[in-house]
Every structure is written in structure tokens, then in C-alpha cells.
Length: 424
Ligand SMILES: Cc1ncc(COP(=O)(O)O)c(C=O)c1O
Image (cartoon, rainbow, N blue to C red; front, side, top):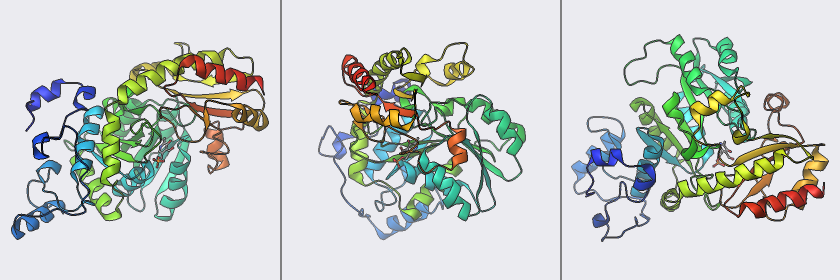
């Protein structure tokens, strides 16, 4: 048993609780760290207990709360997944979380859990290439129609034009991958509420605001505080943070949505394995210090790039000024600019590739949020599958380069950027 009461835990910070919350050493031989529960199935004391747990898993009877339910089978529940999910919910300040085998599993399962054939979505572009493909091609075959609009300052006004009685969600990345564009999540929620002024108590309402917060990570933005009903992550990025694990998370407050996500995860089988959940739990312990060091380095790297004569434009939240239309959104939604920088090099693909090929410290690889710095070319890599229209909406052109800044010494990173730009 934890010595902390629930009210004491509620007063503590997530970076404190990330080290202990939700795990009782004395249920595991006094082990300070949770063991990996490498078991596919769990024993019941009596047949009646098994019957009761299954009934709860199907949503029948009481209690339905995740923690009150007994362990059954690792596709349905497992201690490593539950410890991770408890700590992720704390970081986000949300009621509960479900972990997944990848960010795409989290996004796909959550969309299938919340949408039905005939429903419509509004998507603020750009979104990650995999998400774009899922919505454009896969969900369309299931009868879910999406309207793509441009993310950013005028997204709520554009979204309003597409709202119909069939609209089920507005999906947004803010900041958006790859160009850090910000969208006002609170304004999207206000728009949803204008179309359903009094949703039933505790319910997220008809039009769900779904935010993929992967680019900011859980340290610098908390979308639920400004109106998100569902928050999604590729845990492969900042949460995992070491480029050695693939995972995903979906968080919500509405109990009906949480139950739907749990059921769909159990049916589609997209949960992580216990070792993946264990690795992600370990990574959460250092999430804040990693993210802060990465951000400190990114602030310096972005300033260097912004002053470089071969760079046309830098998209970095730390460079926004009160004169920028997105600055007010930044102040509302972000506690820091994070560590993703996109920049447009003078020239086109030839110059972008010359720069990428001459980097020595930065690895030429997709993904982001890890301890090592990474560089890639969205137009031909992460976002190459986008329709030409969506590339245009997202301003993903051949001269765009995305950098994910790691924890190396900032002087060394700037030296690498400088020497690679000199080769262009
Ligand atoms: C913003 C964003 N969302 C979702 C994903 C998909 O995550 P995963 O690769 O873990 O499936 C990615 C991957 O790059 C991403 O950048």
C-alpha cells in the first residue's frame, strides 16, 4: 500500500509521482521498480471470480472502474500497462489513459471506437503522414468522411463551414507535424459547444475535439486543460524518448469514451506488450529533464538558424513574437516551445538533401523526441504519402527540413548545422 493518501498524491507533481505512483513494492517481494509481468493470463481464486471479472470487462454490473477490475488476460489488462497508464493520466491531468503498441494503433483504435459509418470528421492539416493516410483512405472505406482544412489561426472559422449534424470530431495536431503550426483548441471546443450547448453531465458531447499532442509532448502542453476531449500520443517520441521503443497512448475524461476505447483495444488487440509498457514507464521518470534539456538546446539552435543567410524561414515556437497571430495561442496552450524545429532552406530538394547528407552529428532519420538529434525531409519522407492538396495546406515543400533536437551539447549541434549548411 502507498503511504500517500489520494489527496496527498493529488497535490504532488507528475515528475514526482512518475517514480512511484501506482506500484506497491510489497506486492512484488519489495522490488523498488515494477517487475515485468511477462504473463499472458492471470489465475482466478474461484470460478465465480472469473465470471465476475469477465462481466465487468464486458461493462456489466459494478464496479467498472479499471482498477477495481481483476486481472484477466494481458490483451485486456496487465499490471505493467496499468502502472504506465496511471502515470500518463497524471501527466495529462486526465481521468484515464489506455496504452497501445504504437501511436498509429492508439489513433486508429480511438477513431474506430468513437466514429460510426456515416459520421464526418474535420481534420486540421497538416497531420502526420500515417494519420493522413488512415483518415483519407482507410476510414473512408468504412464510411467516415473527412473534410481537411488548414490548421492555424483561422481553423475554427474554416471548421464552422463544414459542421453538419453528422460531424463527430475535429482532429488536430497542435503544434502540427512538421511545421509547428498552432491551432486554438479552446476555440474549437467553443465551436463544438455552440452546436450542442448543454451536453449531458460528464459527457464530452457530440463533436469530439481530438488532439494529437505528440509534437509538444506531455511536458509543454496539456490540451485537455484548454478543451480537448481526447488526447493522443505516439509514445515512440518524447514519452519513450530513446528511439528504442514504439508505443502509443489515448487519454480521455468521458467514462463512455474510455470504455469504448478499452473495448476496441481488447477486440482489435492493439495493446503494447508488458515489456514495452515497462520501458515506457521507465522513460517517464526522466521525461521532464530530457524535454527541458532538449528545449534549451532547441532555443539556441533555432536562433542560430534564424540568423543564417542560407535559411529562408524557421518554424519554431520559441521564435514567435507578439506580432505573430499564433503568439496568443502559444501563450494559452504552451508552457514552452519544445524541441522540434522546421526550417525552409534557400533552394529546393537539391539544397535540402545536400544539407542533410553533410550532417555529422544529427542522424538522418525520421521520428522525433529522442535523446539524439535527428533530421529529415518531410516532403519525401514522413509526409510523402500526403495528397498534393494536403501538402499544400501544410506548406510541406521540397525546401522544408525538420529537426528534432536532442540532449547533446548545444555548441556541438550548432557546429554541425553550421558545417552542413556551408556544404550547400
Ligand atoms: C504526430 C504524430 N502522430 C502519430 C505518429 C504515429 O506514431 P507511431 O509511429 O508510434 O505509430 C507519429 C509518428 O511519427 C507522429 O509524428
